[in-house]
Length: 167
Image: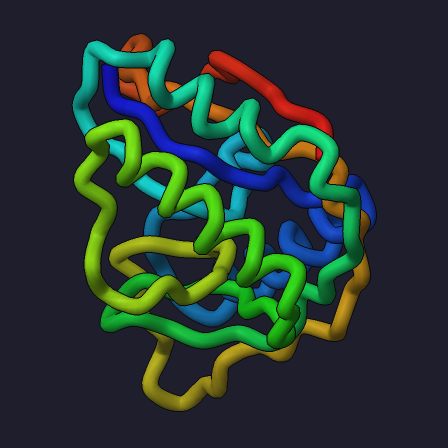
């Protein structure tokens, strides 16, 4: 199974992200994740048969405490456009702690620096005469971490929650 850990946006953040996607649709073309696919990846595990070890790593976060974060701004990696996250020590501590939990259990976590973001569009082409949309800051409460499985159903990607751990 193909697994990753993530945070889902709050309803208010989701609405702001969908509005930014609508503006991107108006300004260009690309592939846009559906509402239920919006997430902030904490760690990508890839293909693994050891869901129990992944679950244990996520469960180790239980009780660390909920916190707030702010989603703001639009950026890109090549043709992938994303919503940014204001620097947040609680989020960084959570992500780096989770990645260490996973490494201790034998998962190969990417060595490149972690950059928190929520993907808005892939394979996106902005019309030359247009500028990228802005994304007003929206605060959200982070109360749980999810272990998600990425699946293909009827030619579409879907994410199924395999485990949720309250913070």
